[in-house]
Length: 444
Ligand code: S3P
Image 1: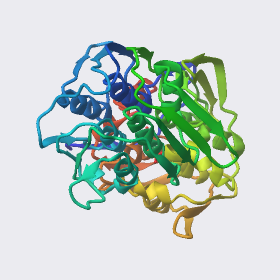
Image 2: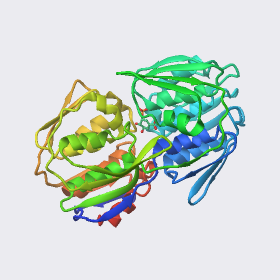
Image 3: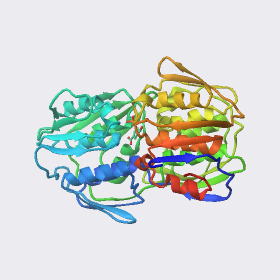
């Protein structure tokens, strides 16, 4: 049937396979936005060509920037910090991409025309207040008091540097402030809870922007000197650990399997899932570690291992694991013992209510789950779990990670699954189903 996949057969063991996954989504979107502000032609190789990145590209093009997407590369001709050209009341649509919606507001702070930003059904329910607040400090005007999309904003020629405390541990908020700071004269000072640090690494190692970072026990401080032009740059985007994670979990859960995933970004602010899995006993390994423009890259080696034990996760690891919790919940459901996760309120603010969806899917699988304090979870694992029932996954706001997690559950734990919205994995990982098929997955 249209737009639904069915999986009625677990995947057979696979061995000696070597795969790559698609390029990193966070880095791809940052490349598009930051290159548009450089002073010339920037080239990215291995850019992720997913719906979220295409949203970033088409919106930056609407601001008058020339972008050529080729087979193997992407060329963006930047026009400097003040180079966008567009007409009043332009409408941008960020589709499903929270990163695009939030970061694009920051590149507009010195544009003196009204611009409206909207998105799809899922994005329209996500909080924009988190970036509206700091951007107002820079001098940006917002037309009404909307806290969610659509929002209309107008920048100013008189942007000023700000002092801001970021309390959510959100990399999108931190990055929005950092990028806005590029357009102001003077020093922006930011105090923030730790979150993924790709923007800091790009500023420092790629754009060579004067930036001071000091890491304290519970927070980081960042100081940025604005109005520093930066030259065009090239970037070879490594594989996305969030995409690799689906294959890591599939391999762990599929008897007699092993897999090498080449060229993955293992930035420590992103590898929470590997720490969690290894604390559970999985023995996932990094091979051939290297550095690239401040990022850490490696191949990842995984061997089937269902002999895992539950954990009580320290919430300090939440940020580095934030996009992988659905997979962690799946793994916890076959662990020996109970697993506990806390302070996961942000999960319900993603593309769908992922904490609630995790609970729902685990309960469908007859796993005992208890929600704690409205933002945490206890999962009682069943080490010999074999599913036999029928499962239907639908009405989940086309959340790509719910689709992919359900697919991995179906292929590794059995049962007859029908998963709706079979296109939505293209939001972040267009080759997902193709790679599964090369490993022998039977998906109709
Ligand atoms: C992202 C940051 C994270 C993450 C999202 C991508 C980014 O969100 O969930 O998928 O590229 O900066 P937060 O802003 O909540 O950290």
